[in-house]
Length: 174
Image (cartoon, rainbow, N blue to C red; front, top):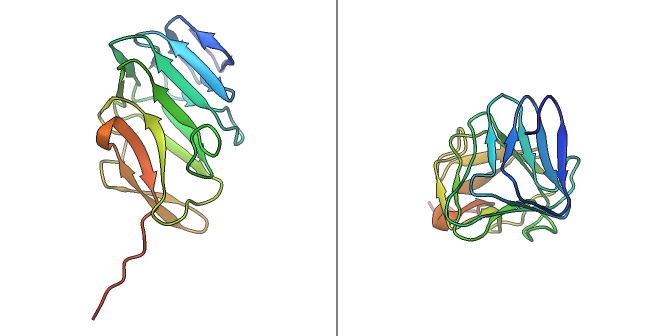
């Protein structure tokens, strides 16, 4: 258990179940791995998962452990940094390995955009075989706002992945 404003940095591979309570944070460096069937749960508002860590660090949090689910609690915030479309290099990613389903369960989403994608480009922030549910306030096809300058990204959960796509310009004829 990670509790009471504690910060837990995963720099290698972690095998037990991880429970985040009371403003605790789970962070990774460039690559961190958690091996458990249900590795993350949170019971108190303020807990966070930050692949790559805070302050713009970029990383991949790899979740594995056989059939099961990576279950997020509605109080557990997922925080990503994005400055391009290459996972682990220009944006954070949670990667599910071995058939785990990611259950978003209405968890809050926070994406810090350091530089905008080019039009039509996507970033896969969660790479999984299947996703259940959505992030709070962001159903399929909704727009995730960023700025300044104000740019909106299209939210998608298709194919078991969670992606943000910068839309292309639409030309209207009269």
